[in-house]
Length: 249
Image 1 (cartoon, rainbow, N blue to C red):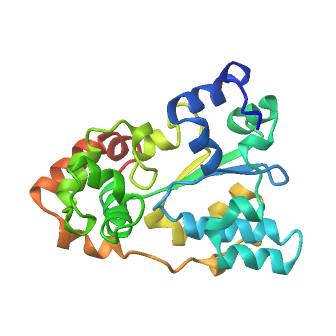
Image 2 (image 1 turned 60 degrees about the vertical axis):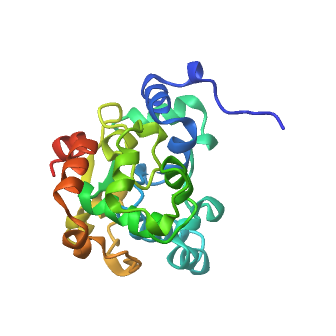
């Protein structure tokens, strides 16, 4: 099979810098483009991505029919196969650069309090022993996932570059290419319930509302105090210093 990924030298300056920082796979997988409504949603895992993909996927899918729209409500994380949005790999380099850099496109993302988000990633992926726990377990000498403490988990990811971190706890400011990609809006997940009118403006879909709100949650926000210790607070502050500062948390 021929590898037809674009050479980095063929990409525009913004796209090239973003791909260099996070890798083509991440940029391609987490970018959701609407050429019709001229917006780009950059997904941040564990920051309302199920909610956003269900909502935006259903709205885009409804352009085909009701059944297609329902697929996104039922399985919001199956967007690659369902195909409501265009992915970067499907676009020529000049159009992809327009998507990431032109004022004609609204670019937005949803971010989350770094402490609650990393705890959510730990509770879902490590605490439950899912695939993402394997790397952490290996770094701790093969320690079973069920026995890995929150502090031990944080101590492992602290020494990883953002590009090498799993996207579920990767530093958000790096993940979205902050300082490379010019965002129209960066919405805090904590304010999302009050931001549907703003999202409607960004997506140029005035009939948008919160009826597709995804109810799947690890309830990490309510468990922060249960797992919070001086050591974990210190590690989170160190790991996510840029997120706290530049995302205004």
